[in-house]
Image (cartoon, rainbow, N blue to C red):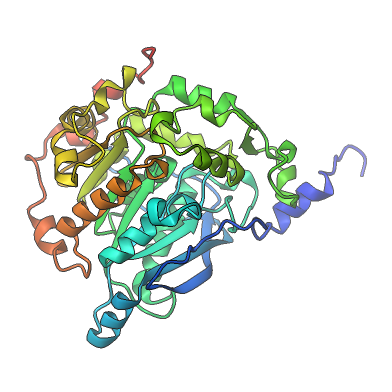
Length: 429
């Protein structure tokens, strides 16, 4: 028909028939003594086709759910635990608590379950040895999950997909066992996702963020975006219909070291090569998560909350990373890391309400990607440290901790944006 411009066939295929994932071998789930993964495969989710401004602390918007059209998709997921935990659950009928691990931009399941030296870098293996089950995922648009039209991959869509995974775990739809106790753990953009999911639903038993802030440094965000190129032009990504969608982006080769992903003195150089080789795409719509830092959204979090950042994370630690200063060392225990994080606690607390009873810890000698540094095991130990107190490996501590989890009485400020956060951090390093 005259006047109608047809999209390229590859883009039309990406829109109408979402690609079923990346063909690369990401090396997960990793193998480890005593490790078993009762479910590895795809889980169905529905992606909202529009984003509604729900979840903000502002009156009238914090609890509403709007009917909206959705698009079916799938998420690649890996549910793992130790053989001892699985046997104990079978004998007692008491399922372990599941920690859902959500990765950040340009990553995937491998961020939490590193195929490079997993005995050192696999958070999954540490947590399952501790007695938890873990559910690692490739978010929609990354790794082996669906790659639908990039415009559908928004913070709201990511949050809603995590909400659906929590429901599936509790209903027994993941591997045939119901898991009544679920905690959320995010990294970077994954933290933005689990914070948003919690602000909208508060349906998990705890939420642990890593590598994020209520004041993401926008100058560093601009630097991140400046290193991106169309995924279609990136040589490391496999040929696929979704690469024709201009909304999919990838890091230009050799540029990741220009960003605060790693504190190089604390990093194995071989890990840098793995990081570049296994990178995933991001979408142009995902940075919209930063908007939710300034509308009071996180004040609607009403479950126990913990934040763990790297000492040298210039993305989230304020001017000259002063808000993540610590006197702790790379051999210190989680309690010491928490005791030395008062600057981070003071920096982040105004962005949360009293029911979050925010606690924080700083990982020394680490940049943004805290699990990929040599002292990675401090991260998994700190996650377990908080999860033990606020949840427990079978959820036995959840009710008591939550009933005592408040830092002060609620005030009118808890339904208003934090005025000290209306201006983003822009001061130079």
